[in-house]
Amino acid sequence: MSATQREAAAQEIVAESNPGLVKTITRAQATQIVLVLIGLFVLFSIINPEAFLSVFNFRSIIVNASIFIVLGVGVTFVIITAGIDLSIGSVLVFSSVMSALVMESLGTEGWAIAAVGAVVAVLAGALWGLINGLLVTRAKVPAFIVTLGTMGMALGISQVITGGIDLYNVPEVLVDTVGFGDVFWEIPTLSVIALVVVVIGGIVLHKTKFGLYTYALGSNLEACRRVGIKVDYNLTWVYIVSGVCAGIGGYLSLALYQQTTIAGNSLTNLAVIAGVVIGGTSLFGGVGTMFGTVIGLLIPVTLRQGFVISGVQAFWQEVVVGIFLIGAVYVDGVRRARASRGSGTKPKQKAIGGLKIGSTEKEGNSE
Image (cartoon, rainbow, N blue to C red):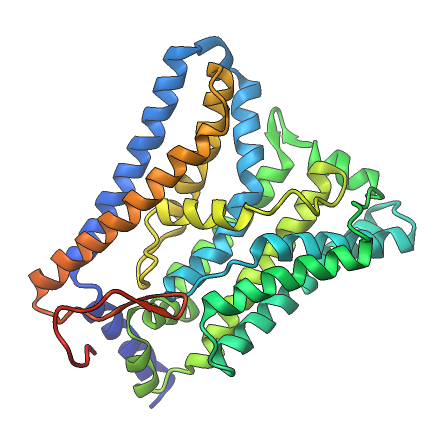
């Protein structure tokens, strides 16, 4: 089968597995999460308009969300394939540790050293992504188990290398320009970099053959194999993309915090996955957008800022985000069931991260 024929087959797989009703639902869900975000802004603006509507507060929100958004780009690719990546927080830490060590050994001065640190961070993240991808595709271990294992491995190796002590030798130019610098006015350099990553990720996901195959893999993996799509190859690259994003996140974390954050990313993976799912990317695969991911990740950050300004303990953010996450998955399941009944297709058994969950109402193959 030629490349053009495979691409056409992939489009058919996506169309068959995600009928028009699902596309309509996706658009409706995108509208809903935007309304939720607007609602939060209105609510906190009423409670404390002077503090919440300040330029400083808006700047804090986008800066605090930037690293999560970079990680979310990679996680969106993974979850669209019905996979999962629990290792992103630990890979972020490992990438920042390796980058800091290399920059320290080279003298931690000037842009040349900072550029080397960036390359090291990205390569370190890509390496863990490659490991995840190969274990999922070649060893056939469920992604949930693989990334749960590499989550511990990446963090453990980081602690062994550093003795569990954070590294502080970060080039001043990196901190001053990327960590705390502005492109112009009050527009943070960190957030502009995050925006560039989102735009590139959106173009790749929505406008390229690789993005089409990503949707197809999450829609019907076996059908992709039958039409000649290189499933293992493409799936491995999906995890490499997630690893690269975690590497970029690690480098940006160094710039923002002026040190590695070995003990500060234990819940980063869950926060990012929750934001991506809240943004409309289905844990069951085949559905998701970069726009939804950005909005979904802005919601918990806005909640936290709003709670702090309103005098509410920031810990309540975790409670509210948990409610949002459970609700998003439940609604996604209900909508998928309705879409399947409306299109006359047989429901397939659901799986998250390679682990099958629940049961189908009908037995048999669903192609």
